[in-house]
Length: 413
Image 1 (spheres, helix red, strand yellow):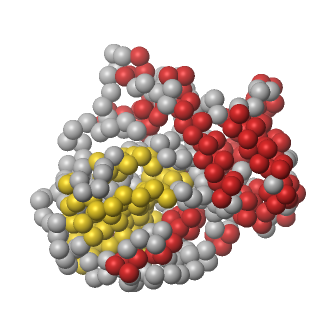
Image 2 (cartoon, helix red, strand yellow):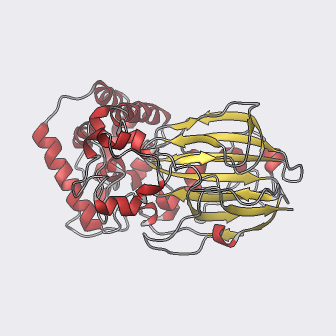
Image 3 (tube, one colour):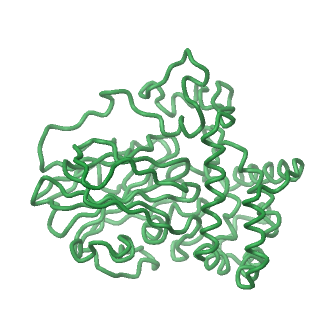
């Protein structure tokens, strides 16, 4: 078994330097206070839920009171949201903003940044696993998605210092690898989300030699963990975050994968956000699982980037898709690709259907804006070995190279 629980720097969704995050949060608080926008109906609904449910009212009051008692504090100068009223005011403001580029200070998880401290408190741990809270958060994120799908969100697609077409951004994105048209407004992108799910030019990510034993990467992603002999049920919430098939797979095909292997890797803020088939085969089953959006493993310790250090944990509790593929390689058998939404990802958009034939490298779907991770689950004894580039390597910096989509990650027996 290879296991890696990495640092909060992973994915570059939030800055590792807490002072930078403090500056962003204070500016956002000030902007939301100054704008004083009327609440969107979904924020009014969130407020009503908090104030009419006695348990949730207790949780959303206590989580802010408990902030000073978090075991790990970053200093007296830390900026914290003072109560749920201020929380709602700032989230309401974020609903009509799009993320800006910043090479060192990017805040790609704005709502996560707002909830950073309260979500780690005992009350926050309980509140953000609550079904009613997650149901309304799903609506909140859907509203933000509407804005990010609209032409109004294109205002960050420019060549200014914090624009996504600035020289620094183009370099970070390797923008010339993607389909675009510089002669058109916003280079042909119709919204922030259209830009976020930009597609590679043909031939940029070629497949390896045609060999049914080769399994390729489903995502452009950095390895997080490889776990073998995975159990039907396990204590996924404890330190180490073991995988528990019953909960990951939402009860589907658990016996088939018992004793098998889980490979997990996460996507960074500046990379490609579509998922492709690791094998040739047939789509046997597709399921969307509702779950949490801002839950994290208490055992992972306080994490300035919320769920980043809790990726094993959120594979069991977060909103996700399950895509079961019957491989044409009988020794490999069925696999399950699990795209998992982290924080601001409210949607896993699946673009294949049951009984559809897929070839290795065919698109399966994509994430809408936000951080994201994914797992691939294999049956027992299906994998002979993992490629060296797929093995978790320890701490790394922002310039580490991810496993490229369509590249070899494993060989079957």
